[in-house]
Image (cartoon, rainbow, N blue to C red; front, side, top):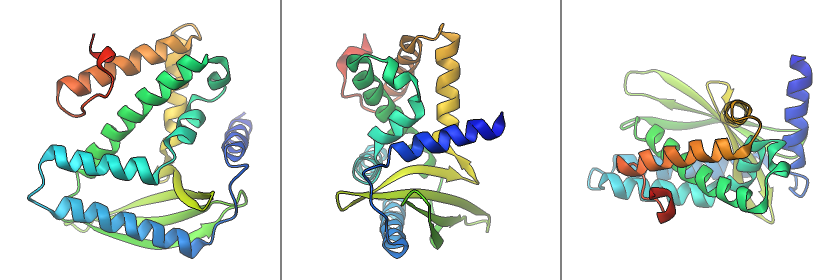
Length: 214
């Protein structure tokens, strides 16, 4: 059963990349080095306000991650079951919560060092770049980035923290929420809307959707 689950996940992720071409691993490494330098620069700039940091993290996520493809993947089979309106609402809410999540994680690190260790070309044409963050205490945190090149643009499609894929983790979590809501995607949308409202009220994000504040 476990093998079947992982096989299904792999096939679904591959299907999202059918138009992506094989990527030069060294090019992917340089891509991640650039992102790492930008993140460290943001964290090291003591003159930036919290909101300015969030804004700059948002720009990195907007331009370096394929949030639409990631969103479709984590929604799984429910993507095709959703209406177009539900799909767009989900992607918007998913983007807002993802930006807040990554921004929060990045802010945990201050004087850390980011290193690109190596990379490997995957069978689906993507490249996994292996990196680590070395904390001031000496602790090393491994982060793997799954990258594809599509229409000459490199984008991140998944992140694995200490070997755990955030995409697969979110896919499982979202599926459980939908199942608990009787198999209806509206249950997940309501949960994400509530989360966005909470993040907005605490100032962690500034929502671009006034209707969520009702």
